[in-house]
Image 1 (cartoon, rainbow, N blue to C red):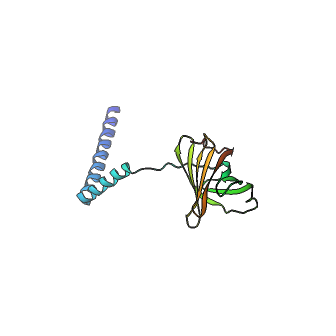
Image 2: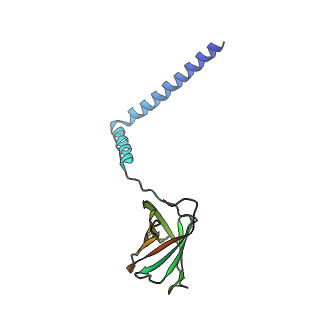
Image 3: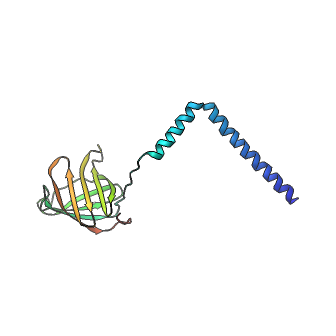
Length: 165
């Protein structure tokens, strides 16, 4: 009885496999060689396409203090959430200035380095760009609408859940 059950199970499994193979083969054949070629080309392109690794700064609070450029004498506290950031002047001539919450994208670009772009949430226009080196504590700041660029120091006030790259 037991061997009969095993044999029946094996026959059913084989039949199901053959049926599935036949269905896939028929569908591919019905689609034609052009479809198969397109699918193969798309799969190859997906493998070859570069990918961009991003970093979630959620939970991080950073202080950027500037000694060069348009932000000289100012320190900003940048509070990051998942996808948004709020920069608040905490020292210098800009204290009291209200800045809106912006969207951001952060990408690791080296050991302990991030490239962070702030974006207008409505238009996705670039508002500000930072290159932060957490090994040296240096920050470079470029805002497309303001010149000259700024440079200073970056300090981690509060760490987020993910360790910095």
